[in-house]
Amino acid sequence: MTTEQVERLLTVREVGRILRVDDTTVRRWIKAKTLDAVTLPHRGKRTPYRIKESVLVKLLGASA
Image (cartoon, rainbow, N blue to C red):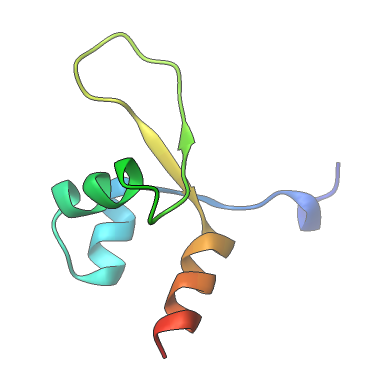
């Protein structure tokens, strides 16, 4: 796998900062299926998500 094929994954906090919204809002969008995310294995109360950079770019392009 080359570097070009690896897509950057963003945390909920990073997406929140880019969109200027709270982390809770990003999590709400993920649960409502408004924002597509990858769910990571976890053992706690809070589910860790990662959002593909291409999904965020597509979302920003749709709002413009």
